[in-house]
Length: 230
Image (cartoon, rainbow, N blue to C red; front, side, top):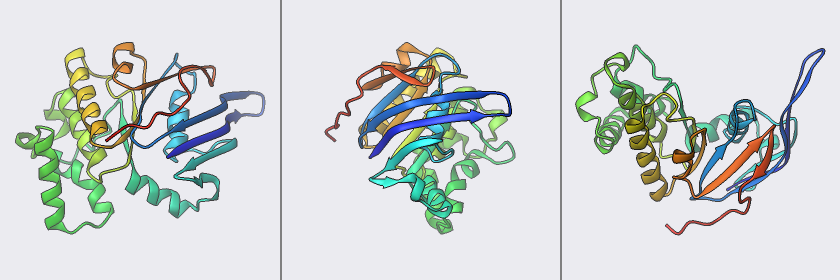
């Protein structure tokens, strides 16, 4: 599904050159649950942003379903992001002026899904994640764990093939963190491919593969993809 070949990301200023990613070679098959772990500043989020087509490598190539990302036009990159990739962030990134229902509905509005279908899909998703009683609440009326569940509902409302989670438990206590990880595990069992950045060994253990990064390099971890039986 995803392959990175000899991939580099280099940031340059007039006086400094910083290599954020250094010769990354990685394959992630459909159905994998991959955790990426490493110290702060090692390139984890940069790697996630490139996989999610939010950034471009300096050298090397990212292939998505056999297609070289460098050959995709911007309109194609945007379409793939909207339809095939869901993003889950540490800080939730909910819109404070929108209700729970409206936050989850937003990706469907971008896809111009008819109103009746939007309502049905949002209510089904809220029920699935135990959020139906909170549908008219606003983010400031929710706990951190509830906000992350809303963010997760928004992330998967379009049924993306790939979920990219950047420290999804970083702002949660251990109880809520385990709840979110349980939901991600369930989504993986339902067929979603998940790539997650984490600092936490306990949460990394939920994944079937662990990739360790240091100074932009893969330094440990099984780089051989495994196919999950669904």
